[in-house]
Image 1: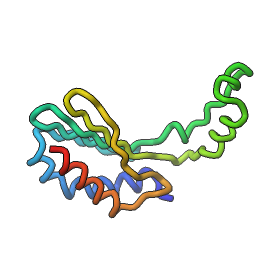
Image 2 (image 1 turned 120 degrees about the vertical axis):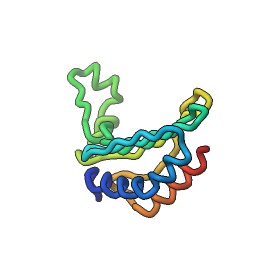
Image 3 (image 1 turned 180 degrees about the horizontal axis):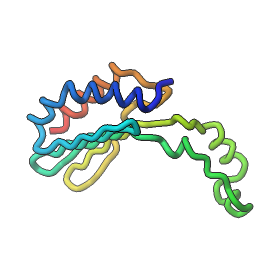
Image 4 (image 1 turned 135 degrees about the horizontal axis):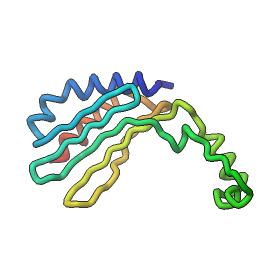
Length: 134
Protein backbone atom coordinates (compact mmCIF):
# COMPACT_ATOMS: atom_id res chain seq x y z
CA UNK A 1 0.00 0.00 0.00
CA UNK A 2 1.21 3.51 -0.82
CA UNK A 3 0.02 6.63 0.94
CA UNK A 4 -1.37 9.66 -0.87
CA UNK A 5 1.59 11.84 0.09
CA UNK A 6 4.08 9.37 -1.41
CA UNK A 7 2.05 8.76 -4.56
CA UNK A 8 1.60 12.50 -5.06
CA UNK A 9 5.37 12.93 -4.93
CA UNK A 10 5.90 10.20 -7.56
CA UNK A 11 3.14 11.57 -9.81
CA UNK A 12 4.48 15.10 -9.42
CA UNK A 13 7.91 13.93 -10.57
CA UNK A 14 6.35 12.34 -13.67
CA UNK A 15 4.29 15.45 -14.47
CA UNK A 16 7.32 17.72 -14.04
CA UNK A 17 9.21 15.51 -16.46
CA UNK A 18 6.57 16.09 -19.17
CA UNK A 19 5.67 19.69 -18.27
CA UNK A 20 7.69 21.34 -21.09
CA UNK A 21 5.93 19.14 -23.64
CA UNK A 22 2.52 19.84 -22.08
CA UNK A 23 3.15 23.59 -22.23
CA UNK A 24 4.02 23.31 -25.93
CA UNK A 25 0.97 21.21 -26.81
CA UNK A 26 -1.72 23.00 -24.79
CA UNK A 27 -2.82 26.63 -24.72
CA UNK A 28 -3.14 26.62 -20.93
CA UNK A 29 -1.70 24.29 -18.28
CA UNK A 30 -2.89 24.67 -14.67
CA UNK A 31 -1.02 22.59 -12.12
CA UNK A 32 -1.30 22.52 -8.34
CA UNK A 33 0.29 20.14 -5.90
CA UNK A 34 0.10 19.50 -2.15
CA UNK A 35 0.37 16.61 0.29
CA UNK A 36 -3.40 16.19 -0.01
CA UNK A 37 -3.27 15.53 -3.75
CA UNK A 38 -2.70 17.27 -7.03
CA UNK A 39 -4.56 18.65 -10.00
CA UNK A 40 -3.48 19.13 -13.60
CA UNK A 41 -5.76 20.73 -16.18
CA UNK A 42 -4.67 21.16 -19.79
CA UNK A 43 -6.79 23.23 -22.16
CA UNK A 44 -6.44 23.17 -25.93
CA UNK A 45 -6.93 26.06 -28.36
CA UNK A 46 -10.56 25.06 -29.00
CA UNK A 47 -11.31 25.08 -25.22
CA UNK A 48 -11.42 21.29 -24.89
CA UNK A 49 -9.71 20.18 -21.70
CA UNK A 50 -8.37 17.18 -19.88
CA UNK A 51 -8.12 17.15 -16.09
CA UNK A 52 -6.15 14.78 -13.87
CA UNK A 53 -6.83 14.75 -10.13
CA UNK A 54 -5.18 12.71 -7.43
CA UNK A 55 -7.26 13.08 -4.30
CA UNK A 56 -8.58 11.38 -1.16
CA UNK A 57 -11.37 8.89 -1.89
CA UNK A 58 -13.98 10.03 0.61
CA UNK A 59 -16.43 7.31 -0.45
CA UNK A 60 -14.02 4.79 1.10
CA UNK A 61 -12.44 6.98 3.78
CA UNK A 62 -15.65 7.98 5.53
CA UNK A 63 -18.32 5.56 6.75
CA UNK A 64 -21.83 7.00 6.61
CA UNK A 65 -23.43 5.50 9.71
CA UNK A 66 -27.23 5.74 9.60
CA UNK A 67 -28.70 7.75 12.46
CA UNK A 68 -32.16 6.21 12.35
CA UNK A 69 -33.90 3.05 11.21
CA UNK A 70 -35.30 4.95 8.24
CA UNK A 71 -31.78 5.99 7.11
CA UNK A 72 -30.60 2.43 7.71
CA UNK A 73 -33.27 1.07 5.37
CA UNK A 74 -32.75 3.87 2.84
CA UNK A 75 -29.03 3.09 2.64
CA UNK A 76 -29.73 -0.56 1.91
CA UNK A 77 -29.83 -2.23 5.31
CA UNK A 78 -27.18 -4.43 6.84
CA UNK A 79 -25.67 -5.63 3.54
CA UNK A 80 -24.92 -2.06 2.42
CA UNK A 81 -23.55 -1.17 5.85
CA UNK A 82 -21.25 -4.21 5.89
CA UNK A 83 -20.10 -3.31 2.40
CA UNK A 84 -19.13 0.15 3.68
CA UNK A 85 -17.15 -1.45 6.53
CA UNK A 86 -15.42 -3.83 4.12
CA UNK A 87 -14.42 -0.99 1.77
CA UNK A 88 -13.40 1.40 4.56
CA UNK A 89 -9.81 2.59 4.44
CA UNK A 90 -8.79 5.84 6.15
CA UNK A 91 -5.84 6.13 3.72
CA UNK A 92 -7.89 5.65 0.53
CA UNK A 93 -7.10 7.83 -2.49
CA UNK A 94 -7.87 7.69 -6.20
CA UNK A 95 -6.95 9.09 -9.57
CA UNK A 96 -9.62 10.73 -11.71
CA UNK A 97 -9.17 11.69 -15.34
CA UNK A 98 -11.93 13.73 -16.97
CA UNK A 99 -12.07 15.04 -20.50
CA UNK A 100 -14.29 17.86 -21.72
CA UNK A 101 -14.78 17.69 -25.46
CA UNK A 102 -17.29 19.88 -27.33
CA UNK A 103 -19.05 20.77 -24.09
CA UNK A 104 -19.60 17.22 -22.79
CA UNK A 105 -17.55 15.78 -19.94
CA UNK A 106 -16.60 12.14 -19.70
CA UNK A 107 -14.50 10.25 -17.21
CA UNK A 108 -11.67 8.09 -18.51
CA UNK A 109 -10.72 4.93 -16.66
CA UNK A 110 -7.34 5.48 -15.05
CA UNK A 111 -5.96 2.92 -12.64
CA UNK A 112 -4.28 4.02 -9.49
CA UNK A 113 -5.13 3.89 -5.82
CA UNK A 114 -3.49 2.96 -2.56
CA UNK A 115 -3.80 -0.74 -3.40
CA UNK A 116 -2.85 -0.90 -7.09
CA UNK A 117 -0.25 1.83 -7.54
CA UNK A 118 2.47 1.36 -10.14
CA UNK A 119 4.48 4.42 -11.21
CA UNK A 120 5.54 2.99 -14.59
CA UNK A 121 1.93 2.09 -15.49
CA UNK A 122 0.84 5.57 -14.45
CA UNK A 123 3.51 7.19 -16.63
CA UNK A 124 2.51 5.10 -19.66
CA UNK A 125 -1.21 5.92 -19.19
CA UNK A 126 -0.42 9.58 -18.56
CA UNK A 127 1.58 9.89 -21.79
CA UNK A 128 -1.03 7.95 -23.78
CA UNK A 129 -3.97 10.03 -22.56
CA UNK A 130 -2.39 13.47 -22.62
CA UNK A 131 -0.73 13.01 -26.03
CA UNK A 132 -3.88 11.51 -27.57
CA UNK A 133 -6.03 14.44 -26.50
CA UNK A 134 -5.08 17.01 -29.14
